[in-house]
Image (cartoon, rainbow over all chains, first blue to last red; front, side, top):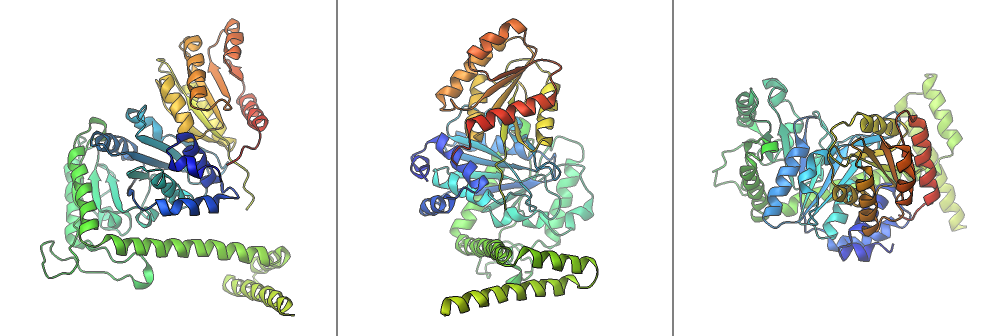
Length: 347
Length: 139
């Protein structure tokens, strides 16, 4: 793809087009991404997630502005949901990011989820790599307004910020599993609104109840819950990170400096306490599993004849076959096809 | 998967009028037609519009202008888009545009002008047409 060289040279038009290719899956995309990959791994990826209306876009706007004042270049990927009915989308995150207009050190790209469920789009990882290779030092990834289980961001970002706002839920919401657990930094935005103190207290109480401070490995098969230990426990090998709770009013830039310091502290924690390499290894493992899953499924679907698949669906619908056995049947059909192929190749 | 390319449209409101109901109606109609609409909000400068068009790599830019400043804003936006290497990206204008101004806008490189009462279907059809004429561009 002729876009790779210009992207590495800082051509913004080429960058925009390559991001389109990443979303659309152009035929020669794998080669382009392979060529870019050696140039990636330098950017600091910060994920911003939280319920709709908590002020994620405004916070990204304020943070990006503050980091720009400190001379860092910024890429932003803002994800909004695709309509499940029409496949269209309204991407409105730029509305809150107008302060960043006209600055060549900032590149904002809006993406639709295009049917993906975890709060990001399927192309987000590759889009981050493209911005990384293009030389942006900090990349903000703003997820769709998330509820409780859209936690893909923690598998993508190095630092995850969860944004809350006053008045959204009671104390029980705060101790449920899910989105709060993934926070490296918790933000109570709109802190000038009534009830902000209460929200901050509820979040702090939740953290004291036993946040898995040294976040267990991300993958389920070797995931284990760890007991929260005091942050000054010198006996533990890995220094623990206790997520701070920070109050902001993003639209007034209040609390942004404090938030910025907390983010930098988390970055230092990742780099100095030897956390980064093991986290990155986990992220790579998860990404490879995701990609394998997609590729194996595509391969199976391309090999199993469509009429076999249709018959199995009918059998499940007529209760002649249960879904588990149906899957076993389809896997057998796939194995058969592979066997015939390899026998032909051998003879 | 068959991957029909999704049309991306920038809907922008340049200038100072604070009335964006029309722009939102259009944005929603385009969404319902399966397009991805990047909506920028009110009071955009021509520079902001051209920059958003570049970063978002849109197929079409639609401007909503009710202030009467179209003859100043539109040619400036077209010029900035051209400077951003977006010569091939069509520009549409909707809003309150007197008939006698339409030839000037067309001369400035506008592909379509849509006044009050235009059906959303006509706009959707126009966008599909200009995107198709642009051809299946390379990634």
